[in-house]
Length: 229
Image 1 (cartoon, helix red, strand yellow):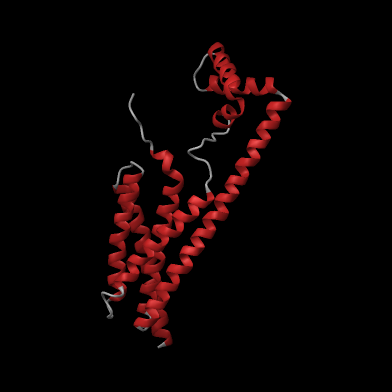
Image 2 (cartoon, one colour):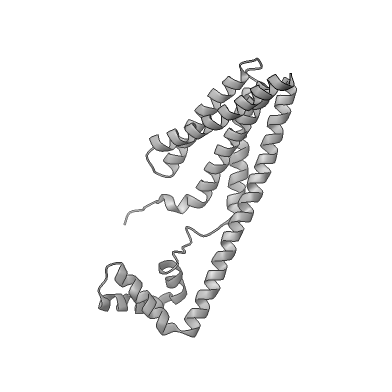
């Protein structure tokens, strides 16, 4: 026997972690670059960045918890519905399974045998998996998603915020942008590695959209700084 570790088993927390870290880097770097380009003081930049880190982490956690809880509620509803169907018309449900297996390539006789044996073993689990595509690996986990989002957002946001301590001059908007693009590239590579996917496309994708967000924010900050000044 050999062990297999598939990326799908970690898709729940991995999606939330990558989203949180990406959002933390991009939003905090954009905030810092924008207010720095507008001519804000170092203290204002630090306050803005820190407020963005805290607010963003809490927002990500709350958003993930609410959205994934909605997914879990829908899953529970489907489970109860399938239980009622199995109790009300088991013969129809058995035929439904048979046709599913036929559509996957089994002949009629073998499909019937598989459907009967799996139904006798665990009818509900079989229908949830083969009819609805619901498995333990893909089940909604609100607390896990919320925690992964909050921690990853705070970690991602701390990286561009630390840049303020290194560069305190007029070049800060460009320094934090360049550093954040490097952070995003690393994040894309780590996400690809964790998901066992090729690295080039995720790295290009995450750095491109991060650069676009920061460029727009710097432009707006510069415009407002010039107008207000």
